[in-house]
Image 1 (cartoon, helix red, strand yellow):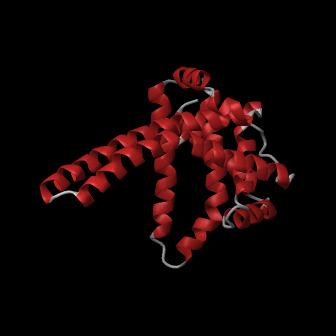
Image 2 (cartoon, rainbow, N blue to C red):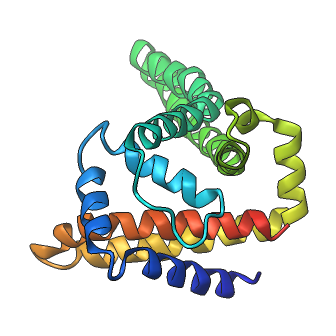
Length: 215
């Protein structure tokens, strides 16, 4: 499935999931803005990642919450390498900069910049693997499958590393542009963000689902 086709199908899927189903949309919108409770929305996206079509019903809230909690845990675990690198490289550079004379501090600041770059690259790589890991967790309903490194790497290779990265960049741009435009709208812009949060969450999850199945 081409990127443009995927965007179109994901939009139609999300429109069918929410348009005319206003109770579902309102409930997801309310859920999305309440800390901890918003795990239910993450759990709902897990069901979307399973490839359920039409969009799944909003039911069994306890299971949705558990799936959402696991979604968050999986995402955090995948980011641990980036966190460790950040602590070592950036934290260490900050410590040296604060405790050294100006000459050494300048070198430490330069090192901090390099540390930021390395951390960013590692975070991107972790994110690439975490995305497929979440789909594997959704499909196989086993926590460990989210960290099956070899299988995840093979799936990305089957999709095509370039295609995979470009597709996620396009998705990020589309979602980012929507949010950016909303921030430019006085007063009601932030309200529209809350209203559209479920739409964008389902849209993004469906896009990733289709990308996973394209291999």
